[in-house]
Image (cartoon, rainbow, N blue to C red; front, side, top):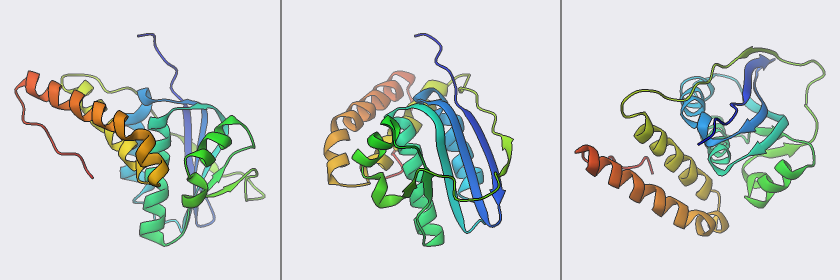
Length: 185
């Protein structure tokens, strides 16, 4: 498999709003690092709301969409409000709307603040070492489960992908002699 580029990710604040920016391609290769960052920093952040700026995104795969859905669900469950996605009216926006993101997020074409956020770069690196492939597979599975939770249309569209990912994880666990780990859903 050829090396796929990692996205450039920034995180910071404007007033009481957490801002997460992405540039480049959001693909499964960054899933583990992004999931850790989402769970450890973004979900734990005390900001009133979250703005996700996708203005610089060229491509977004279904795993990346699932990670975004996770942020949206955290925002709604923890703060009682929808997160905001900033995305020009392009193929990425069309893809997000077709996957019901406009029901979970407020979607806009423009950054909602007069001044840009002061951001720090989020370091991303693919997982390495023993068990990294299985851990990455589990993150990809859970991202697809998060994505499928957005509605019946997504459940139907991703049920075969989720079944294949579950079977692959079970096979890898059996080959490694480890008991399969249940998914988070």
